[in-house]
Image (cartoon, rainbow, N blue to C red; front, side, top):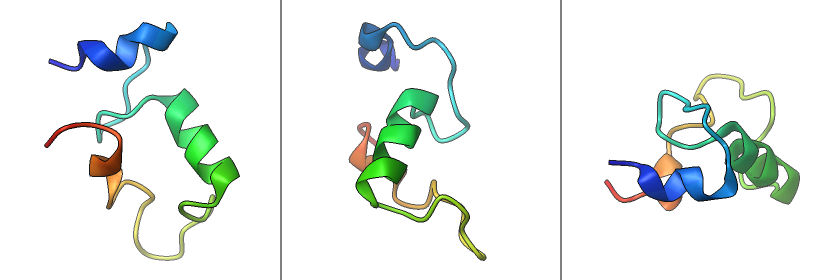
Length: 51
């Protein structure tokens, strides 16, 4: 299903389907705060994979 995410050698999956590496990169780019107040940083995870 999510084979595309395994290309970078990252095997860990978050509940949203994005990898920890992608999550860290997105936080570094400021796409979402690293410590969200109410909404988890997975609410627009569809940017990273097909729905």
